[in-house]
Image (cartoon, rainbow, N blue to C red; front, side, top):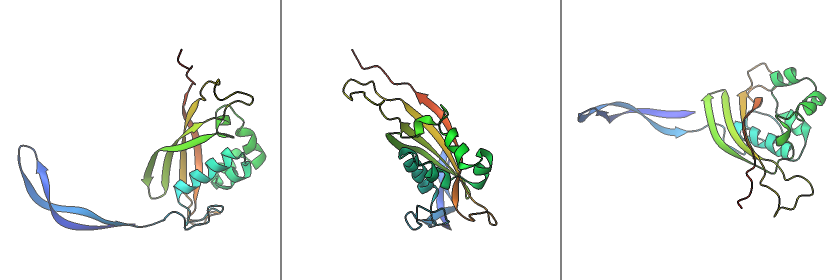
Length: 178
């Protein structure tokens, strides 16, 4: 929740002195503080950033059920049962996420009170049997997570759950300098 108050303030004007006007000032922000909800279970106390982090952890650890847990009911209906979801993760578009070695949030957007988007950079793991000193650097992928708050009357009212994950871009590994 945002707490705001109207106050007098200065408004800049082109080629003249600022004028005094009424402006809104942000006094406080409150809402879904991180860490209050149990991250292992979808619920209203788990924020959207934590949902993305929980899915990334499950993907890194190759726990399909952990990823499935945070998929929205609409997402689950679209993908079918968890077995179909697991096969979908093996598609070339999603395969870099499974067992990745590193991920980091790149950009976070709160579109409205019920829709959140996060761009995540993912680095795949080195191929088995490659020496780290001689292996070429791994490729980096950027994915977009869209997370939505579930409406009242749904299976998990008020919970943030993933509606979609899409590949945005992939960077090919660069050869080492000569």
